[in-house]
Length: 285
Image (tube, rainbow, N blue to C red; front, side):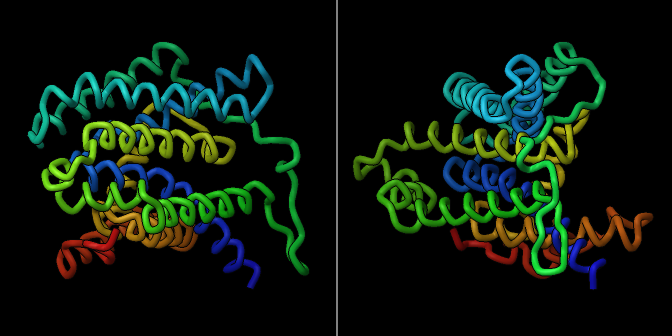
């Protein structure tokens, strides 16, 4: 019983990190129809910045704000200055964002070096917490709670606010939305910035557990693609469901059959592509 309970905890905590990463990817694709291949570097660069700031301030929360702020500004610059030059052209967009991933990744390597690093966790989350007769790592429980809260907040904003209505309108038909007076240009920038911020937030929250190293941006990008393919591109609900599935598969696969850990991730994705190409929640925002 203890084994399965702890695997559930590990899978859910990792799944919530994947949700924060893939939710931004889903939002950007849903509103802008851009498959942003630089998304993984937003995750990694946020952690690098947070670690640097923590080293000077010894504050996890200042590091969190700094990492999110810097990555959000990078996202705004990419969307406003670079991607605007090649609108509605998928291949150049994919090539540009992939190139940006390599450039920013090499920039991080040049600044911080290639040594893997870990972001220290807040002291009040460093120990275990007791639930009934079980002890759980407090930080992993924190990660699960944060992921659920952010997911609920995103769902509420998208389903019950004016901003959410504008986003749904842009997802359904950007041209019609613009003809009715919606500032799709501003909405696209805001969506790209939010997506970048979510990726950085996920990276920083996961920094004390997973750390950061050279090549992490590509690893998390692949996992994000698995999540959105299983859940459905452009769907927040799909990102949430897909992240939980991938998190659990990753946890159980690495524990039970470590030699086939990747098999447990990519075979379900392949089956989804064969039998349900739009994903489990495809078409549902």
